[in-house]
Length: 137
Image 1: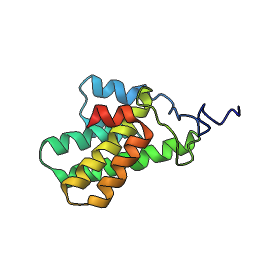
Image 2 (image 1 turned 45 degrees about the vertical axis):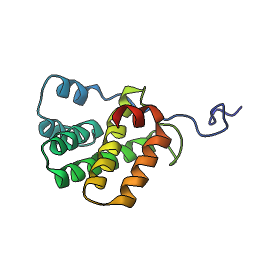
Image 3 (image 1 turned 30 degrees about the vertical axis):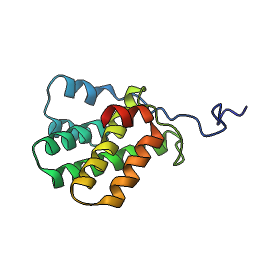
């Protein structure tokens, strides 16, 4: 079996490198906007901003924050060897920021009537991590 394949013959799971500082700041109660400003590459900070905005009824802001976290996460995934397909396990904590941003993007897209984007993002989330799809939905 090649190193680059999983047991089913597909690409191996992608595990983003740990970035504990933004996670620690958020856990300590630092405002997500401050964390995003200090760590703009952190999908987790953008996902938290998206979740907070959505909870406050600021759907368009949630969409924008989620899209930022999603794209920052795609950049990180590509730097980690991801080639556009394959598992992104929710069980690996550093992957959760991207997966949360993807979920938030799907949720906000649906709320603003972007049905095609909602479906695409929801399917991407399920394909990447069934655990994330079940946990976050």
